[in-house]
Every structure is written in C-alpha cells, then in structure tokens.
Length: 401
Image (cartoon, rainbow, N blue to C red; front, side):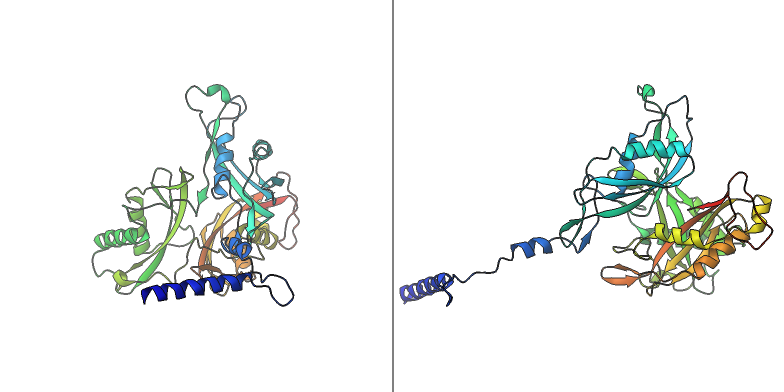
C-alpha cells in the first residue's frame, strides 16, 4: 500500500511538471510571470534619502568639519562660524549645484565650500527602488580649536558645535531613556517642594542640550515673564542633574537637543506621554510646502519686518521660538524662548500665527504632533538707511535664520 501511495505521488509530480512545459493554444510555452523585479523593488522603502559612507547625511557634516584647516596667522582659537549651504546629490551619487545660503563671514564660507567640493561619492536617494536626484540643505556650526600635538604645521582644526535632534545613538540617562529621566526629575522636585505642594496636575516640557561630555545645558530662562515656583524648582534640578551618556553619529560624540514632557502633581506617576505630547524626531517629519524647517525659515524671513523703533535704536539680537505642528498640520503652542526685546517677539509670533498649514509628521504609521525650535536673527548692516514711515523691511537690514 505504501508503495502504491509513493508511485501515485510520483506520477502526480510528473504530471504537474508536464503541465508546466505544455504548450498553450497559440503554440508558445506557458510562461510564469517573472516577479523578481517586483520583489527587488519591494525590498526598498517607498522613499529613501541619500547616504554618505553608509551613514546619515549628518555624517557628511562631520567629515567636512574634520577636514577643515585654518592658518594660525589669520585665525584664532575660539573663532566661531555658522554657514548654511544647499546642494544636490544626483542619480549617480555626485554632489553638484553647491551654493551658500547663509553666511556671516565670507572667508569661512569659501573655505567650507572648497572642502565640500572634494566630497567623495554618495549613495543616491531612491524612490520605489530607483535612484533619484535629491536636494539637501545643511548648516555647519563650528569653532576653531588647537590642533593635536605634532600637527601644528597643518593649522587650526574645527570642532562641530551644532545641536542635533537625530543621531545614530541617542543620549541615555542612567542606562535608560526619557522615562528614567522623568522619574528622577519628579523625585528631585518632590524633595525640593515637599509632597503635596502641587494640588493640581501640571505638565512642563523640559528643553535642554546634552553636551558632548554628557553635561546638561538647560534652555535659557525666559526674559519677559517670571517663572513660578515649579519652574524654578525644575530649573534648579536640571542644573544639578547627573551626566548623560552623550549621543553619537558615526561613532563621534555630538551635542543633542532634547525636549521631554514631564508631569508633576497628582497623578504624575501614571501620566501618559504618547498622544497629546509632541515628538521632536519622527520617522516622517512634517513638511512645509514640500520642504522642512529650512523652507519654513525662508517663509518666515519674507513675513517678519524689522521693528522701526529697534532699527532707530540699533537694537539687534536673536529670537528663539518653539512651536508644535499638530496632527492637522497647524502651528500650535507657539512660544518665545528667548528674545532681545518684546517687539522682536511680537514680529515672530505674528508670523507663526498666520503661517499656512504643514503636512503633519507620522510615527509607526500614525499621524503625530511634532515640536520645532526656530531661531530668528535680527541684524542691522552698517550704514542702514531707514525712513520714518510704517515699519517694514528696511533697506540694509538683514535677518538670518
């Protein structure tokens, strides 16, 4: 019986093989559709940005800054620079179309541009598995430092000073992440203020930078409003916080900007942070007319006006604003974190209030709220002329973002 069963299975297999080779009515062989191309394409994400030496685009920033050298007879240790550039990574991975978009001192931009032009090949961006041309915007913030021993003849080196919100390895606190940090802050605040000091639940968004050595640098104290008892207690706690394990990109330590919501008062231990609170970094970041924060900066630049009173008095400075792009793409929770004068704050706030909607961001396939920080520099060029008319974009004044 077992032999008959085996023969039957064998005959069925031969019959199936014969059918696979059997000609169809038009005389051609029945073809099995080749799905290999579809399978190959499906292995790629729907859309993928370009990469540099196997890493994220930020790796290119660090590569460029490591390569910079400055003659000691023209530059000093401690000199700082901020240069914005835009370029294209073509379908073959070549860097083309380099242009400077932001520059405080041209000689820094010239040296940076020469180094960028020496870029090795990139891995191009892809869309549905096919290489595509990708436009990138990048900001370089660096400080000049002494060279390593034995390399003095090469000139001063550059050290990256930018603050990142994405990294290969995010900072960790006492071996954990934001949850461990929240618990630590809550306990410290309770010990300072005493149990039961808060009769109503409160939630604060703690903004700070984890430095390269793990130290925490809290966000600047607000200049135009007084902190309440809870905010003062939290600021004191952050100042005395233990060191974090710093973030790294391509194995190099970087400064990392964090924004962590923390609940206080009744129910703080069981507070949820997943839905109503904003992310800083998500899988798909919000888009502003197809671009990101840099494109929004350009829009803000066209909207804000230099306050005439500040222009007459020669007042300059930087406004730092924070806002959240909600699930509908609207700008909400806008606030000024730092400002040299209320008139500058009003200009930036008015621009944020009338901003068009964004395309919201998403995480794990769900639309989420995302927080941004926007610096706006108000500067007056030497020899600026102004009229006594209505405030406006004054000739010779500049705002860099």
